[in-house]
Length: 119
Image (cartoon, rainbow, N blue to C red; front, top):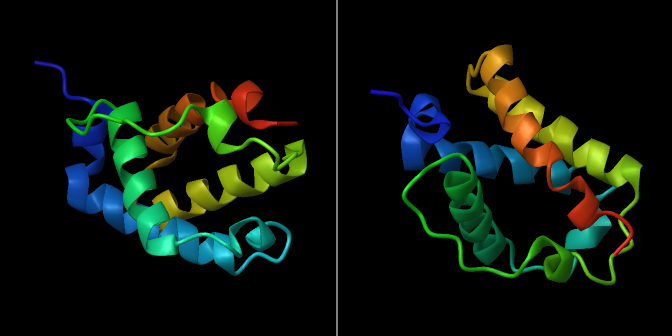
């Protein structure tokens, strides 16, 4: 039986830890942290953990806004997207996820790029 990427990474608890590390890195990055100044970060962390879990084949059903709506009015540029992707990479690596699995996760994220940039 094939396991999902969600299961391979360790499930809900592991994803939540990665998301916490991911946002710690984002909030420490002056090139992108201004996008989160008015964000309820506890809510954002929970929401992101559900979204990532769903995107990687986990059981959590994602019921949030579309990527276009969630990023509307932010006018995110490629350098912002790349910074976020870099922090996700580093957060996964921090918890010992191998490069092959990280590449799989980042491939999923890359499919969202057109729905996020320039909105």
